[in-house]
Length: 131
Image (cartoon, rainbow, N blue to C red; front, side):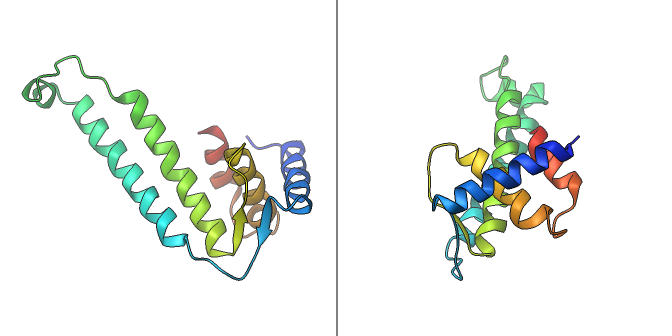
């Protein structure tokens, strides 16, 4: 559950990032399609890994009877959500100009630009936080 205290921390962290020039609001959104494609590719990878990991016949036919890709199903699913969050921010002109702590910054920017003004429902933010 996303607590009010965590929401306030995220908004304050976003403001710090904005003031530091790490989170930038522009009118341009050149990379939206790039992030959407990465999101789709990531969820497709998760589906394939889940399908193979759940099907003993497929694992046998691939010569990998002990294959277990469930950890990477989780990772690819998370990255699908992460890239979609980046696409959402990008489509609104929000740029993240820092490679360090990028996941932290994206979460804070989502809270600041979409949750705190009612554009994104709480359960979407909670799902992203839990992932």
